[in-house]
Image (tube, rainbow, N blue to C red; front, top):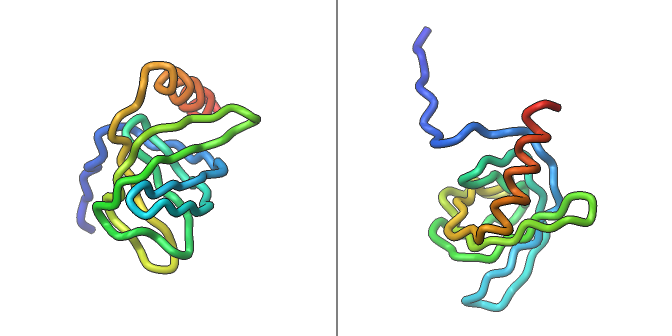
Amino acid sequence: MPVTTERRAAPRYSLILAAEIHVEASNTKAAARSSDISSTGCYLDTLNPLPTGTSLILRLTQSGEHFITHARVVYAIPGMGMGVAFVHVPAPQQAVLERWLAAAAVA
């Protein structure tokens, strides 16, 4: 049985959050939901994933609190979803994300 090596830069946690995607280049918006998240990115469940390389603004919501950041699509699985990498996370947003991840780690 082959052994696989974890390639992710940060641990991921199962965290289902409402997601709003805004593609600035086309001024389009879409809804999705996260199924897992880390300090460097997340996976978004959506039937219509965006092409790899697409830049977007991502807004995740949990209990009325928001995490907003620029992101880039790293990979897409048609009809299922896409993995996105956070591109620039402002310090106040980083604090929100770290709090969510800490809570998910003990859940």
